[in-house]
Amino acid sequence: MSRPGVGTTAAQMGSLRRRGLGVSLCTAAGSLFATFDYTPLNFAVVDTRIAVILLVLAGLGALGAMLEQRLLLLGVGSVLLLLGAVGLVSAGHGKGLIGGGISTAALFAGLGMGFLGVAAAHDQPARPQDSGDRPTHPA
Image (tube, rainbow, N blue to C red):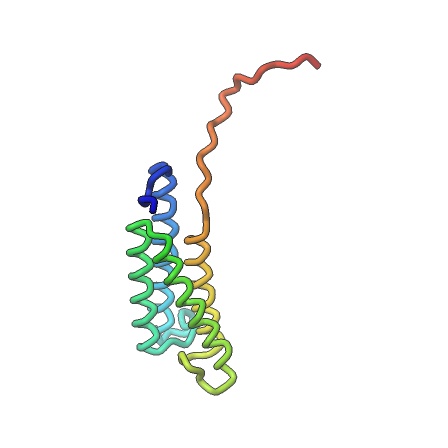
Protein backbone atom coordinates (compact mmCIF):
# COMPACT_ATOMS: atom_id res chain seq x y z
CA MET A 1 0.00 0.00 0.00
CA SER A 2 1.42 3.36 -0.96
CA ARG A 3 1.56 6.34 1.33
CA PRO A 4 -0.42 9.46 0.41
CA GLY A 5 1.72 12.00 -1.29
CA VAL A 6 4.38 9.59 -2.55
CA GLY A 7 5.31 10.46 -6.12
CA THR A 8 3.37 13.71 -6.21
CA THR A 9 4.53 17.26 -5.87
CA ALA A 10 3.37 19.70 -3.23
CA ALA A 11 1.54 21.73 -5.88
CA GLN A 12 -0.44 18.66 -6.95
CA MET A 13 -1.45 17.80 -3.40
CA GLY A 14 -2.39 21.41 -2.74
CA SER A 15 -4.61 21.30 -5.80
CA LEU A 16 -6.59 18.34 -4.39
CA ARG A 17 -6.86 20.13 -1.07
CA ARG A 18 -8.14 23.35 -2.69
CA ARG A 19 -10.71 21.59 -4.86
CA GLY A 20 -11.94 19.40 -2.02
CA LEU A 21 -12.28 22.34 0.34
CA GLY A 22 -14.08 24.31 -2.37
CA VAL A 23 -16.72 21.62 -2.85
CA SER A 24 -17.02 21.18 0.93
CA LEU A 25 -17.58 24.91 1.33
CA CYS A 26 -20.25 24.83 -1.38
CA THR A 27 -21.94 21.92 0.41
CA ALA A 28 -22.00 23.80 3.71
CA ALA A 29 -23.19 26.99 2.03
CA GLY A 30 -25.87 25.06 0.15
CA SER A 31 -27.27 23.67 3.37
CA LEU A 32 -27.25 27.06 5.05
CA PHE A 33 -28.74 28.92 2.10
CA ALA A 34 -31.45 26.29 1.71
CA THR A 35 -32.59 26.79 5.31
CA PHE A 36 -33.01 30.57 4.98
CA ASP A 37 -36.55 31.88 4.72
CA TYR A 38 -35.49 34.49 2.17
CA THR A 39 -36.91 33.78 -1.29
CA PRO A 40 -33.86 34.61 -3.48
CA LEU A 41 -31.64 32.31 -1.37
CA ASN A 42 -34.18 29.52 -0.93
CA PHE A 43 -33.19 27.51 -4.01
CA ALA A 44 -33.83 24.07 -2.52
CA VAL A 45 -36.25 22.90 0.15
CA VAL A 46 -34.15 21.47 2.99
CA ASP A 47 -35.42 20.85 6.50
CA THR A 48 -33.21 21.03 9.58
CA ARG A 49 -32.50 17.30 9.64
CA ILE A 50 -31.20 17.29 6.07
CA ALA A 51 -29.25 20.52 6.67
CA VAL A 52 -27.43 18.83 9.56
CA ILE A 53 -26.65 15.80 7.37
CA LEU A 54 -25.29 18.14 4.67
CA LEU A 55 -23.13 19.95 7.22
CA VAL A 56 -21.76 16.65 8.54
CA LEU A 57 -20.97 15.50 5.00
CA ALA A 58 -19.35 18.87 4.26
CA GLY A 59 -17.20 18.43 7.37
CA LEU A 60 -16.20 14.92 6.29
CA GLY A 61 -15.39 16.25 2.83
CA ALA A 62 -13.25 19.02 4.30
CA LEU A 63 -11.48 16.46 6.50
CA GLY A 64 -10.83 14.27 3.46
CA ALA A 65 -9.50 17.26 1.54
CA MET A 66 -7.20 18.37 4.36
CA LEU A 67 -5.87 14.83 4.81
CA GLU A 68 -5.77 14.43 1.01
CA GLN A 69 -7.70 11.18 1.22
CA ARG A 70 -9.45 10.59 -2.10
CA LEU A 71 -11.31 7.60 -0.63
CA LEU A 72 -13.06 9.79 1.94
CA LEU A 73 -14.01 12.29 -0.78
CA LEU A 74 -15.29 9.40 -2.88
CA GLY A 75 -17.40 8.16 0.05
CA VAL A 76 -18.93 11.59 0.70
CA GLY A 77 -19.70 12.00 -3.00
CA SER A 78 -21.27 8.54 -3.18
CA VAL A 79 -23.51 9.21 -0.18
CA LEU A 80 -24.65 12.54 -1.62
CA LEU A 81 -25.30 11.02 -5.03
CA LEU A 82 -27.25 8.17 -3.42
CA LEU A 83 -29.33 10.67 -1.42
CA GLY A 84 -29.99 12.57 -4.64
CA ALA A 85 -31.10 9.42 -6.46
CA VAL A 86 -33.36 8.38 -3.56
CA GLY A 87 -34.82 11.88 -3.45
CA LEU A 88 -35.47 11.87 -7.20
CA VAL A 89 -37.13 8.46 -7.21
CA SER A 90 -39.25 9.18 -4.15
CA ALA A 91 -40.20 12.75 -5.14
CA GLY A 92 -43.29 11.50 -6.95
CA HIS A 93 -44.66 10.16 -3.66
CA GLY A 94 -45.38 13.41 -1.88
CA LYS A 95 -42.48 14.93 0.02
CA GLY A 96 -40.16 11.98 -0.65
CA LEU A 97 -37.96 9.97 1.65
CA ILE A 98 -35.35 12.67 2.20
CA GLY A 99 -37.75 15.60 2.28
CA GLY A 100 -37.90 18.50 -0.09
CA GLY A 101 -38.49 17.79 -3.74
CA ILE A 102 -36.75 17.70 -7.06
CA SER A 103 -34.66 20.75 -6.17
CA THR A 104 -33.30 19.01 -3.08
CA ALA A 105 -32.50 15.88 -5.07
CA ALA A 106 -30.71 18.00 -7.67
CA LEU A 107 -28.72 19.76 -4.92
CA PHE A 108 -27.60 16.42 -3.47
CA ALA A 109 -26.77 14.92 -6.85
CA GLY A 110 -24.84 17.99 -7.98
CA LEU A 111 -22.78 18.18 -4.80
CA GLY A 112 -22.18 14.42 -4.94
CA MET A 113 -20.91 14.69 -8.51
CA GLY A 114 -18.66 17.52 -7.42
CA PHE A 115 -17.05 15.38 -4.72
CA LEU A 116 -16.76 12.41 -7.08
CA GLY A 117 -15.12 14.63 -9.70
CA VAL A 118 -12.59 15.93 -7.21
CA ALA A 119 -11.84 12.40 -6.00
CA ALA A 120 -11.48 11.01 -9.51
CA ALA A 121 -9.41 13.83 -11.00
CA HIS A 122 -5.77 13.03 -11.52
CA ASP A 123 -3.42 15.95 -11.29
CA GLN A 124 -1.16 16.45 -14.26
CA PRO A 125 2.43 17.41 -13.60
CA ALA A 126 3.19 20.99 -14.44
CA ARG A 127 4.66 21.43 -17.89
CA PRO A 128 7.94 23.28 -18.12
CA GLN A 129 7.51 26.69 -19.63
CA ASP A 130 8.78 27.31 -23.10
CA SER A 131 12.18 28.94 -22.72
CA GLY A 132 12.43 29.94 -26.34
CA ASP A 133 15.45 27.71 -26.91
CA ARG A 134 13.99 25.79 -29.81
CA PRO A 135 16.24 24.36 -32.43
CA THR A 136 15.89 26.17 -35.70
CA HIS A 137 15.08 24.16 -38.74
CA PRO A 138 15.75 25.36 -42.24
CA ALA A 139 12.58 26.13 -44.14
